Amino acid sequence: METLLVVIFVIGYLAITLEHNLKIDKLIPALAMMAILWAMMAFGIDGFNTWFDSGNHALLENFGAFGHEEKMELMEETLLHHLGKTAEILVFLIGAMTIVEIIDYFDGFSTIKSFVKTRSKKKILWIFSFLAFILSAIIDNLTATIVLISILQKIVKDREVRLWYAGLIIIAANAGGAWSPIGDVTTTMLWIGDKVSTAMLIEHLLIPSLVCMLIPSFIASFLPAFKGEIEMEEDTGAKSKFGPTMLYLGLAAIVFVPIFKTLTHLPPYVGMMLSLAVVATFAEIYSNSKIAISSVDHESDAAAHHSPVHSALTKIELPSILFFLGILMAVAALESLGLLFNFAEGLKQGMPLMGTEMAGTQVSDLVVILLGIGSAIIDNVPLVAASLGMFSEPMDDQLWHFIAYSAGTGGSMLIIGSAAGVVAMGMEKIDFFWYLKKISWLAFVGFIAGAICYMFMRYLF
Image (cartoon, rainbow, N blue to C red; front, side):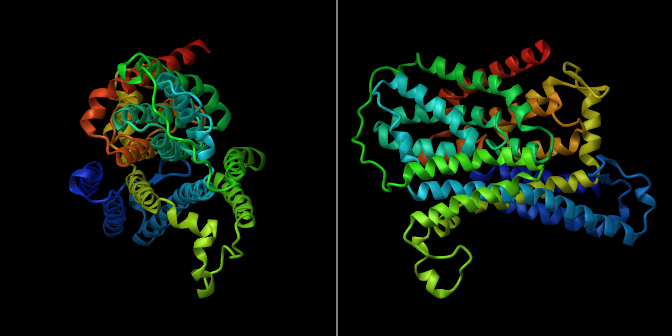
């Protein structure tokens, strides 16, 4: 039965990876895979002899001797446990996405366009690289990429030149998201899962992530594509006078979340909901609408488009939320049967021991680097979800920091390897092989440079 479950997971995984070839949204195989795995576990519960206790991160003793009712009750408790942990991530993401959409409702991101005063292609490259690096750490790499490419389209008319900028924005955004607990979905997963803390994550990954961004940008600044000057369109200004205010308020509200978690020790989604409430309050005040956020009557529906909160909630990436639900719960199914735990033990014993010493065992740096390279080929969310079930190292162990770096930045090596790359691909119609030929080698150099920097800092300090 375990073999059949793994086969179903692999088939679902391949369907997610081949999303563009199959013309099927990846949320569909993710949700189907999750439901089928848990259903088959329920039907075959009496045939399983091992069960993984997620709370104690160890295999449950004498599970095979449990009766049918006991096993079913344990499975329901485990399912509820994983749903709760997954919901923490999803509610957090919904809050962050809504704040970003509220900022966009007031055209707040056009304020960033005013930072670009030069016509030099090289200087614009550095401006956008640093903007992507910083902005992605605050509003996540996916949103930062959308915002910056939207601004780029207003500044750079030549599409061929824009493609080069988009490629470097992807690298910089993924690098910026790796060192922030709210900068990338995978890093957020590690943070909410109590594998990394905000302060230690920044301390260990800020410099390696910066290196990962600086090296490709430095090399690219000498390429022909970034020589000379661009023709700029006239600035039409922001659509709303409240744009700058909402931009700074929204960014401050998102940055407040890690502070709230540190002060209260409550899960991050609680702080995100508080931040959303504050931003939504100001958004309603600044708009002419008097519609309550909870109102669902017909009169409010007629004027709902006037409400920034209603508008923001209709624009959030719900397909992405459902995809994360499916993939995280599917991985949780394999974790519950102890398959990931056993795989990790075999991996630790079978791989060459090149890595750091952790809790009496060694985990190869090569494994983590391969995970980073693998995240360029397949989605990094299930890879990190699997690592959460595979390894039992304590919070802020060096393994988790290296996983955060590798999973966050490795996806830049292929256009389909990260959410930032996929959205850029859609916005600018970037060809897969163009990116592979022009940008992938820059991303690889940056990834390896950052990894070497991380390992050097680890051994040095």
